[in-house]
Length: 443
Ligand SMILES: Cc1ncc(COP(=O)(O)O)c(C=O)c1O
Image (cartoon, rainbow, N blue to C red; front, side, top):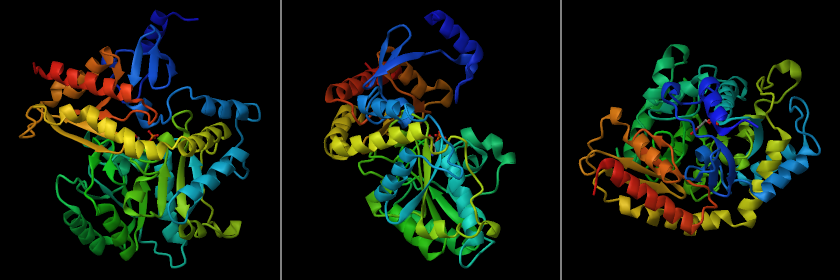
């Protein structure tokens, strides 16, 4: 067994971490986890305040999910889904089709959120070549500033966060872009007006609009005005443009509905799911298509209508077994009802002291997804200089106090597992408030 010191040393020397400046990396090596707690190699405990990057739903080491994985492991760890199938993935596809809004009935599996978006982009493009009235000019995508849809080249192209995406522009296809549908910039009518102008002018070139419904996640959990999503659906239908809803962050009860689209009674043409699909146990993602989209891909092999796309581990039976067990838990443990009615109120209460903090611009929340935006002046919204890395400093302090959080710039995301207890929520809020005070210098 390597010692903790050896692990830290090898980690620094050989492990290139995602979205991490390795020259400044300070290792935190998680050895075990239980419920909402992570335990590092030194035995230090941290409350998992961001669900292991927005994916853990029911806590770590849930016996039902572990049992489902172990049971499947005794049958088969993997079988390809290229031209063949496996029972857990079949069951999961059926259950997702039942749960997803409208006639989103056909599930294409992949292994990460980026891949689910990549598949959706290619399906949308191919749809317009193969549908009953083909429109080969429809090959562009409309996406939003500050959007984040993943890191493969296609999902990067539709992304709109300068810090992550600008550098790669020479590698990316052109995207029609609109400002973010941020409710602080205007109401639904304002944003829909801008959208309609673009759709009216360019719908013959547009294959699809790609949106994170209800809130832009990596932008800082930025909320959209009520009525926007429904209006977006109506306009895309009117102008004959597909709607791709990226629910990789918002899916599976986090926002208080099974899927965020349900807040506005919307059925997209393609729905992308990932992260919480397996409750944070194994990598898996899905792109779900409506009957209309799916039908365009059917025909004899020689017609060339096949979706020539896929990944080795897509539809992996271990991951599918974990996902089915998670869906059982969501229903049996009344997770939606609890998350909507009780825990989201407790989360709001635990963050309430920050709402009027002089260094907080805004506390925002939808269901069990919350964010605290720091500012040099909370009233005028004057930001801190980005070089001060206040969000990072605050999270570094909460981590030292036993609450693990990871910021997005100066936005501190709070997105715990839905199974978090009242006492844990109280602790999370208290440590975050103290840390904001300490780092921002408030007595
Ligand atoms: C909205 C959204 N879409 C897609 C992705 C990409 O998912 P993954 O990191 O699993 O590739 C993310 C990741 O955070 C996301 O926030």
